[in-house]
Image 1 (spheres, rainbow, N blue to C red):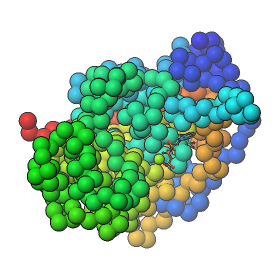
Image 2 (cartoon, helix red, strand yellow):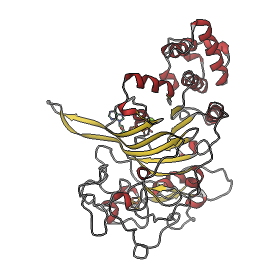
Image 3 (spheres, protein in one colour):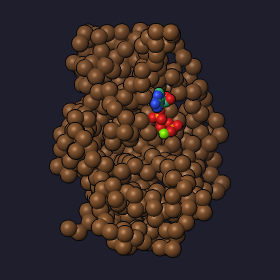
Image 4 (cartoon, helix red, strand yellow):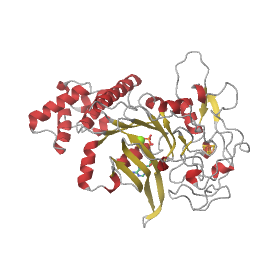
Length: 427
Ligand SMILES: Nc1ncnc2c1ncn2[C@@H]1O[C@H](COP(=O)(O)OP(=O)(O)OP(=O)(O)O)[C@@H](O)[C@H]1O
Ligand code: SF4
Ligand SMILES: [Mg+2]
């Protein structure tokens, strides 16, 4: 890969092996504005002052970027450079999912929607990784690609050591038992013409998990109890339940196969706030009881705060920040994460708070901006022409706190110092 004299990869160059670099230099763009909002401590801005970026680095002349030989060394190790922990259930390496765009009478390939554009992370057994970002940033596509509900474009995803993307039919069938998905809208994912018992029995039958009708009905009753419903609910149809109850049924159906991993794709986004808390508590209880591992997708950082051990923030198909949950909320490094956090309400009566308002919409993943994908909306005071030219790798800025920003220096991440402690169920 061609590099500049200081070793960084220009966006107009050939690009890294993962295709991170692209495009030519972009014009200068408007900065974000600060408006009324919420003060969340470190990410806050004093009233009336210019937007304060937490851990704002010194001016660039005083803090030269770390020496770099290529993208991955621009600011520290990337998740791809780091050996996953021994208890990793899922190891994701450079996963991409592009949806082709076809045009014209000849159905010519005119481009791609880069829904997921080089995502790497791991999930430990019994861990919850929260995944957040604005609509269209690729959260659902990531979850669906990892479970091979859609075919990947590139990358690897090792589930218990076996690459999901190269699995044959028999292995995929086993994966369907060990990895489940719970959707945002339980109503559309439940067959309206089937009773709850029929829905769950169908899953048990497909996977050969209950011998005979009596055993299946006993299992259905047990699953309903586990998710806080009553066995007599089994004879009802989906429309006879509230939204929260329907989500409990969706969870019971996922649990029927005794999975190790559940991708929770916005499982509470359609529910009232009070019901959201109940469903999140239920998911936490089930995790403790059955040793489940969750990839928990949500729009908003407030939803994932209490359930997540670590949080990944996505933007335009990439993870732009990844850290231990407490570290991310106390010490957000990315201007994007800081803006998302400033929108989270904090119930502190009388406290003045500031909100960083993101300017404009998320650019199209079919035509992402060159350089840092966030640069057209970035409010970082050190944003400059380099941001439109260099593609920041997701780099460890200290203590396992990863951020994709060339203006965040090494050492900015405090990190927990160690991996989060996960309570594994008794063997
Ligand atoms: N089957 C598809 N064909 C073409 N484009 C798709 C397809 N599925 C998703 N996309 C596009 O991929 C991008 C990412 O979509 P995705 O649903 O993963 O986002 P998301 O982060 O889950 O958004 P939301 O928060 O709204 O659910 C979007 O631009 C979307 O339009
Ligand atoms: S590299 Fe950092 S400062 Fe530059 S545009 Fe991206 S997020 Fe903003
Ligand atoms: Mg989605």
